[in-house]
Image (tube, rainbow, N blue to C red):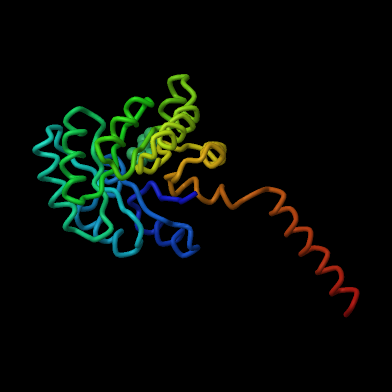
Length: 217
Ligand code: E4P
């Protein structure tokens, strides 16, 4: 499974990228607003750090406006993916952009039907929101699992980005049901490589080594 970072924080991206773990980055208007930086400047900087796909979202709600914005955003770097909301206008824009060879990530997907529509319209990526479904008492992981089945059934090329991930359990469950990608907040990432028994084990090894050295001296 590929790991994307769900952040626009350049320091977080650099830290985790240095471990060889960042296959791409996703942002949205909320994530960008947290950084308090110019949208174009921060996206270009992220694209210069990460060679994989970097998603930047349009603000327009009509297809014409989305396509216009997408064509501009796509010029910022070779690895740009334009994020488009899952609406009728978004589907129209996705279809036009796919014919122009501009990569898209259709976002805010909450049902199998929405995912299927986006994939058929030509989306490069589709983003089902796991955590927000869990928030309303609907198991988000089931949507990811069902979408993978549907894409496989019909040989659709879109890749699933499991989004709105909130926990280590979400990441593990997402991997088990075969999402192509999990996009993970920077703050959650360290929990993926940590375990209390690893920390305890290291502490014990250090203690035993110190005793052994003292005896030897
Ligand atoms: C990423 O593409 C999504 O925009 C993001 O994962 C949404 O996460 P949230 O539901 O925690 O805001």
